[in-house]
Amino acid sequence: MIQATEQGYGDILITPEMKLGEALNHILRGELSAVEAYDQALEKIEEAAEIKRLKEFQLSHKNNVEYWRERVASVVVEPDTSSGPWGYVVQAFIGTAKLFGETSTLKALKAGEEHGVKEYGNLLNHPLVEEYDKRHIRNEILPEIERHLTSIDAMMKLH
Image (cartoon, rainbow, N blue to C red; front, top):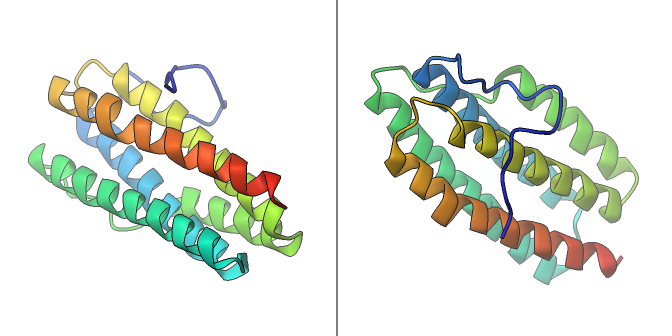
């Protein structure tokens, strides 16, 4: 199973000092960005079985968007409706990868999923995150991301 940790990119923004609503909105923006990334990637992928699988992964991220929207609203904060500046970065990254073919597109999706693991690790370490949410992350979200990563690796081997 994937172990989420604090180590990783210098651009991870969830910190223990953040207010809870701010941290939850950050993870919500990441999930919105993932949905957008899969939209872009699906434009490049041609194999029907891969398209079906990637749509399933996108649906998983859409479900996470709904979960985090509800959780943000539960702490009396207005949920973000867009991925914000991070979404533009992801769009550029995926867009560039699409120019180099399916393997590059899949590598870009994998990098995004790995980044998500690190972000969720930071959220798990946030002192104000409810145990209910931590269980959901450990038992539902991280295992799902693990399946995404395993499947993306398998797809890359076919290209």
